[in-house]
Image 1 (cartoon, rainbow, N blue to C red):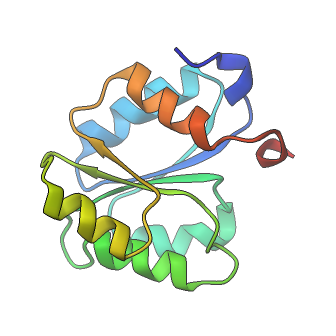
Image 2 (cartoon, one colour; image 1 turned 90 degrees about the horizontal axis):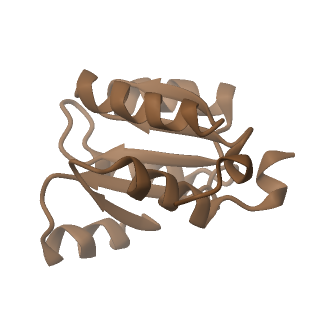
Length: 133
């Protein structure tokens, strides 16, 4: 389990069209001391990223209008956010989905439903001391 103190101040964005997934992630992350920014879809996320500058981004794959692959690709094409870790969220655990995620620049893949531990461990794996500055 990730040490909550190590996650304090980390800014995490969760992009998912499911209110349940967004709220679950928000509760887990806030309890661990993270700052949380929520977005309902890719367009909503792109509008908020520049303002909030998250340290880590979780992005659902299956979303209306702009899917997770498109959203991730747009985030990674922006020079300011190219190095921001993007973790794809999906209820599918297929090799094709993982490979497609890598092709658009995702840094990791987390299968839904995720546990509190898996979510926090994923954040901790990308959180560096400089990320909280």
